[in-house]
Length: 265
Image 1: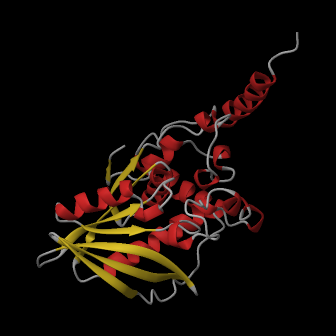
Image 2: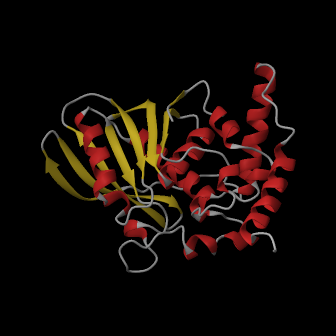
C-alpha cells in the first residue's frame, strides 16, 4: 500500500527544516549575542522588503470622541506612509500627568480593533491607568479592502503582496512602529514606557515589532508563540509567515531580541 501522502509531505518539509536549523547554537557570550542580534535584525529587514528611510508626517486627526466612566475614547487616524492612514482608537484615562502606554494590536477577530475581545482588553488597561492605542492592521477593520465585515487582510489580500517583495508581516511591523511614533507624540504619554500586546495574529505582530523596535519596553505576545517548525503542515495565516525566515532563524532567537527588555509569553 502506498504511504500516506500527507505524512510523505510532512516528512519532506520537516527534513528540510531540520537540515536548515541543525547548526543553531546559543550565543556564547554578550558579544556574540550582540552580533547575532544585529545580523538577525538585518535579515528580517531584508525579507520584509526594507522600511522607508524617512518617516512621513503623521498628520494625526481626531474624528470623534466618546466619554466613558473613567476614560474617553478618541477616534484617531494618522499617516504611516504618504497617503496611507491607520485607523485607531485611543483610550485615554481621566486625570492629569504622563502615563505609560500600551499599543494593542488585534488578531483574527471580525471587527479588528472594534471587536468585543480587543475592546475589553483596552478598557481594562485604561481603567488601570494606561493610555491605550488600538489600531486596525492594513486591510482589516475600517481599513478592509472590501465591504464585508470580517474581511481579513491575511487572506488573498495579504498573499498578493508577496510578488512585490513587501510581505504583510513587514508592513505590520513598520505601521506599528509608526503607532509608537504617534504614542510618543501624545502629551499624556511617558514615551519611555511603551508596551505592546496582542493575541493570535496580534501576538505575532507583537513578537516582531517588539523584537525590532526597542522603544517597546514591555512585550506581551499572547496565544501565538511557538516554533517555526510547528508551522509546517499547519494552517497558518499569511500575516504570520515571514518569507524565508526558516532559512535563518527560529522563534526562540526572535524572542531573544527583546532582551534585556521585559517579555511575557
